[in-house]
Image 1 (cartoon, rainbow, N blue to C red):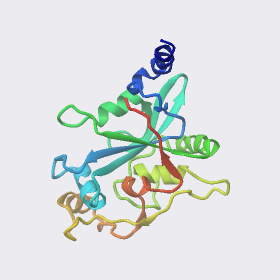
Image 2 (cartoon, rainbow, N blue to C red; image 1 turned 180 degrees about the horizontal axis):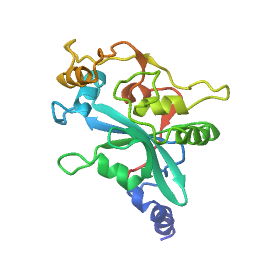
Image 3 (cartoon, helix red, strand yellow; image 1 turned 45 degrees about the horizontal axis):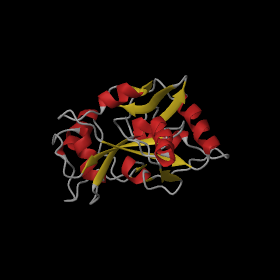
Length: 220
């Protein structure tokens, strides 16, 4: 009986986490990676599909987006950069609605956390300085616009003001060595070459950074 009551006392606060005593809550500065299973069919002409083709590799989970969590006023807020909102801060419900899949299901949400809590909280304040900026469809590191992992890269800085994450030559080609149609059409409309090999970041690569570790947080 005592064991039952102890289990109940542990699980009641964790009901939203599926009654898993090991589950944790989101913290300010956590990064939420949006993942699509490798066998999930995306629209062939969508940006998500193009990102998956270029950065997913042979992994079972293709991470197409990364967002920053903030816990404030007892609510969960999301700071991220998307085509729809630009660089924006909005409630978790908006984030979930924006990334609901065509069949009505949700993608995989993978939460990763810095070991340095103070740095993570400082990064959120850095990210807020970019609110209102447009989404960077050009994927250029020198303009004012920002794409999702670029926002994280520019916000998560060490005590010297240097990024804690790493940039690498960007790849827009698929496994066959060709550019997906989406990228061809997008950059043709923008009137610029595809920025192949320009230094940048992507959610798939960022998720493997040593500065991060996975935490068992269930969303929603």
